[in-house]
Structure formats: C-alpha cells, structure tokens
Image 1: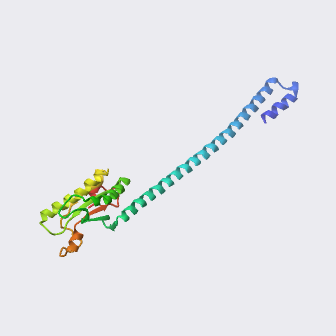
Image 2: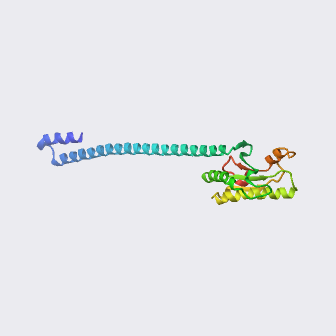
Image 3: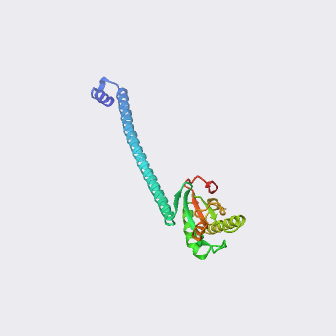
Amino acid sequence: KALDRANRLADEGGKVKVADIEYEARIASKNALIANEKILTAQAREELEKGAAERQAVLLEARERETQASAQHAQSLEQELADLKAKQTERGLVVTLGDVLFDTGKATLKPGAYSTIDRLAEVLNKDPKRHVIIEGHTDSVGSDEYNQSQSERRAGAVQAALFERGVASEQIRALGKGESTPVASNDDAGGRQQNRRVEMIFAEDRSRTASDVD
C-alpha cells in the first residue's frame, strides 16, 4: 500500500513534495523487508521443527535397537543357563554341579570339571550385574565339622576357578552348608551321591548383590 501511494504521488508530479514520495517509498521498502523476514522466520521455524522431529526419530530408533539387543543378550544368557540344566526356584535359577567335580574326600576340581566352570564364567562375565551364590553340600558320612569344612572348601574351589576366569569378586559369594540340606536320603549310595553337590544360585533381581542371595 505504501508503494502504491508513493507511485500515485510520483504521478501527480508537482502537486506533492519530493520528500513525501521518498517517505512513502521508505515505508514501502521497510514493509517489504518485514514481510520477507516473516517468511524467512517461518521457513526457519519449519526447518527447525523438521530437524527436531528427525532427531527424535533417530533417537527413538536407537533406543529401540538398544532395547532389542539387550533383550536378545538376556535371552542368550538364559539359554546358556538352561543348557546347564538350571532350574527355577524361589531363590532364583539354580545350577547343580554334582560330585563328579571332585574326587572322593577331595576339594580340588577335577580336570573334567573345567568345561562347566568355563561356561559358568562366560555367563557371569557377559552379565556383570548378575550375582551368584555358591553353596557346597555333603552327605552325612563323617562328622558334622568335617562335612561343614569340606562343603566350604568345595564351594571355595569353584569360586576361585571363576575368579581365575575374570569374574568380579562382588558377583560371587561362596559358603558351605555341610550335610544340613540334603535333597535325597542318606541311607543309600545313590541318595548320598545326590547330596554331595555344589549349587550355583543366580539371583533374578540384578539389583541384589551376591550377599543378598540367601
């Protein structure tokens, strides 16, 4: 409008002052600049909103990939424990290592035990937040004191082997139960063999420490 007025003033020639024409022209130019700035501002806002939406989409996709990878990782570890014949209990997943790990009356791991120890260490190293308690158990042959000591030594031997394979000390707690927790009768050889065992109890709640898994 200011530009139209300036043109009309110019057409009228001598009837108006040159200053009036220049004033209207300046107003027209300023209005054009303001209009152009509004367009540029709107375009910039649109680009920013578009960029923000794209960044949000990228972040969301990254989080979804991370969640999926974490779920697959956890599923893989659970499968490894299942392959070790882990059983679900109120205390968590329990892997039972029979007396085949040790010679009779001994607390030193036999060479054939290390393949199982290697697999257990792999599970714990892949999942540093997972904690486990190692319990040694015996049959009722011998004195209570001897069986308690033997169960502690065997649990400690498994713990030491896991430490040697890089498992963090805060992930593991070892203790002996002696003959106090049989799973079968001690009246026959088969039952006594079942009672001579080492149990690995894996906590379900990763916020708990190994000392909490009782």
